[in-house]
Image (cartoon, rainbow, N blue to C red; front, side, top):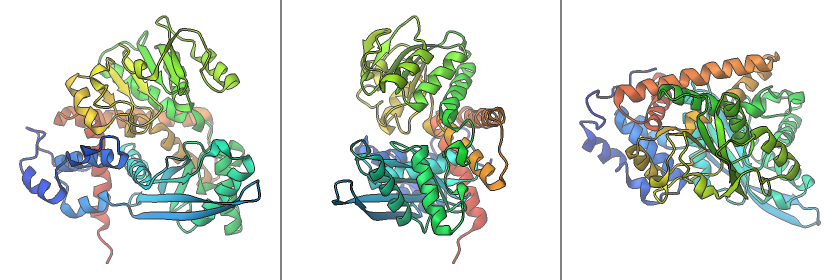
Length: 445
C-alpha cells in the first residue's frame, strides 16, 4: 500500500484549515442524512482530509468520469409504447474496467447511482482487484412487467449504453431486481452487436454461459468471513456468538447460513414482511426452504414476530444489516446493542450515525469491505471468461477467503495504526490505492 502520509499523533490533520478551504467542511454533506451521494461524499472527504490528498487528485476522485442517461422506448404487451429512463455512471476507471451492477427499480435516481458507482470504486480498491467503479439502473417497476417486457427493456437499455460497455471498459452485473437471466439478455445483445460471443462483458451470468461457480454465495460468504475476523479480533468466541440478520434475500440468507455453519447462533431474521426472533436459535436452512416455497418469511412462525426496526436493537454479538440503505440513522443508532455490525447491504448506516456507533464502542465492518465478496468473485468470473479456463468451486472459495481475510487485516492494521474506525480506514486504503495510480499515470493533455 502507498504511503498514506497520515500524522501518527492525531487523527486531525495539522493543516485542516487549508484543506477545508479547498474541499469544504467535511460535515456539510450531513445536512441531508439519507441522501446516498452526500453520505458517500462525507466519508470520502474525511478520508481525503486524513490522507492530506492533493487538491487536484481530490477533484478528480470526487467527480464521476461519465454520467449517461438514455431514453428506453419499449413496446409493451398491451401494444402501447412506454418510455423508460436508464442511467449508467462510470465513476473511475484508473485501475481497470468499470464494474458495477444494474438495478431495475422505481427509486433509481442519478444521485443514488452516482453514490453506488463511487462505492464500487472504493470497494474494488479496498480488496485490491483491478476494476474501477460503475453503477446503472432503469426507472421501472419490474414486478408489474412480464418477462417479455423485461427482456425488451434490458435489450434496449443495453443498446443505449453500448458505447461504454465492454470487457475492457465497463462490465455490469446483477443488482436490485435483476438476475442471471437479465445478464444473459445483456450479454446476448452486446454479442449480437459485436458479431461474436463476448461472455466477459458481464458477470453474474448463468454458469452455462460462463458464470462462475460460487458467485451466488460470494457476497454472503464475504460477510461471514469478515464477521468471523471481527469476532477473532475482539477475542469473542465464534462458537455460540449470537447473530441477527435484517434482510433474508440472497446476501442475508446465505450469510446467515454460513455464519451458522461456522458455529454462530442466528437468533433473528427478517425480510420486508417482518421477522422472527428465537433466542434458542433459528434453523436457517429450514427458513431458506420456507422462503423458496412461499417467497417471503411471512407466516414462518418458528419464533416470536419481530419488526425490522426492533431486530436492529437486539442485544446480539453480530448484527448483519443486509437489506436496505439507511436503516441505522441518528434516530435509532443509540438503541443499537450489537457488539459488531457487519454491513451486508450497501449504505445501511448513514454518515451521521457513524459517530454515535463509535461513541458506543460498536465495531463496524463497513459495506465496502464486508460485502466485497460479490465483486471479488465477479472479478474471478471475468478472469475465467478472459482465459477460457474455469475453476472449481473449492478454488473460487479458497481464493475468495484469501482476499477477504487479507483485506480485513489491511484495513484493521491502518485502523489501529492511526486510531480511526474501520470505515474511515477502509476508505483511506481504497483512496490511497486509486490516488497512487492517478499520480503514476499523470494527466493526459
